[in-house]
Length: 306
Image (tube, rainbow, N blue to C red):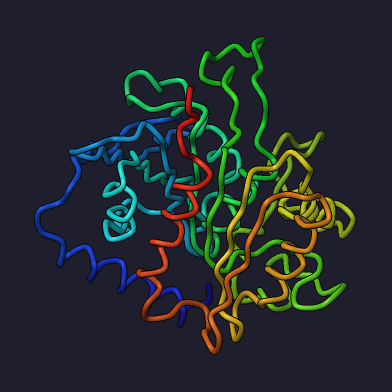
């Protein structure tokens, strides 16, 4: 998630896009799932050409909470469409303009939108999985742990839908910003993440000036840190979760995966941690590991037999 790590990952995404030829899917680009502050929130929809299984996979497009349409990696799509999954590549409001809580809100909105259009997309709204890497993994875990139920009183029909998912799989995700690497180490654009201030540039409306003001109060920042940490929201009804993480990760320490998996096990949530010995924040065969995600969804998103 630092600059030296993000660039190779983005180059990998772009280069693998270029080598794909006869895609096994149809692609519908720039589907608008919401709007905010004059910005359209979009997703691309990849529908398998053959043997659609009616389950959905959300691909969270995010690295360092930077999200862009250009970063949609088709090589991450085909392992799912090849098995019949409809894939929704979701672009959220990106830093530096938007912060992590806003990205989380966007992801909730995207799931509600997908569920509201289940008939149009020909998917089963009760069989939705989500994947992501790094910041995308963090957002995926947030959806897994803090997915919200239906709200039939919401003014917007889309917001009446649930934002819960039924399975999660991700690479090297941040899970606890107040215990980063070891207990008590705070990483809210500070400490180990001091190089990444923009996603943590939290603001609030000042009651007197009616302007957005930067939050500097440590207690308020800590409260936000708790709210945006997936580990905070773990509960017994969470969906099955798979994490793949390198044990030599210098950006997101393996400790983040370990403490999260331990919490899932405490709550008896089905989970698995796959370690990649010697691997840092990404590895050359990472694309091949996406097939493990597809296996996970085959197991946990399978259609129930009548």
